[in-house]
Image (spheres, rainbow, N blue to C red):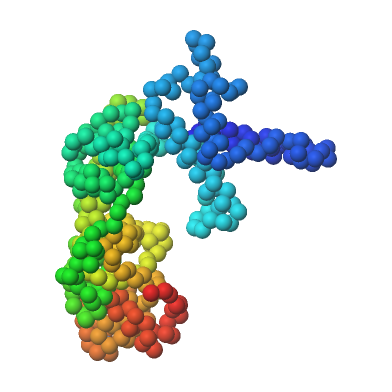
Length: 416
Ligand SMILES: [Zn+2]
């Protein structure tokens, strides 16, 4: 990656300085250095020539040979995926500058420095889907060993039964395996295409058919309630981050007391990283459980489009919001819903789900975030704040027609 970035940067710099001179001397633009191609294909081709000692700027080794001396020790894919990533990062930068890309502005890619970036690489599965599962270069040799190209069998911790069965039955074709190191442990994720779930799973007869609103609260992870006003489920919040704050604080303090560059600092750093990893794992496990439970039980889910990155900027809220993993939950609900044939309705973020009374439909002008229960002054209803919001979300289509809502300042039309 750095190799390509350095080349592109040098090329851009020399072009801009040459253009300045060319403008001064009135020389046509064609005579200055040509732009490099930023495509992944040209990057791979150039890097292969460089590492094999075939290009002019290849390294000269001590024994007189040219090229990267350790190139045969690594799988070829490692170099290739780095080239592809560099090309993608540059493309994101270019399209962001042209205004062709949505979202936040993307800057020129950073150089990757050792110890600061997560060590990761991709390995490709080399055979076509027509081949049997036993001849794929990425495959399970037994329940706890995954065979990877060049690396051979690698021991896997954790359950593999579902993915193994799908691969053996030809229902999941692996394109690539991504290996990533986090806090001293390697994780592998398999990317590929999988066939749809069986029709019986997708349209289960026991599913709750009334629209279900899911309100992601602060006190609990989320509350599910249906349009009839029945409270269905309350998933307890991920309080792990807060519970682990004490441990985290102690580890941070221990790290701060160590001398930079010492062995003790290294140890303290690892200890802190392990606590962070544990918190992340617990949170991810819980969010997966919740999203799975929602998409398997209900047929229509109504979720709110929350401005999570905006809420994270609020320092008082950020801990609670990141703890509740709000953005991740809606992302998981959206993709898992497709697997199970569940309809997901996303409600506009300006829909006053918390401020509306689920009893009579009156919208309050103000509702402080610290008030945990909703008390209606018109009909006298007292209800849990998150439950009230969940019911309103479930009734979303109906509520949208109530005239009192229409004068809401930011109310706009949205898709169903
Ligand atoms: Zn009311």
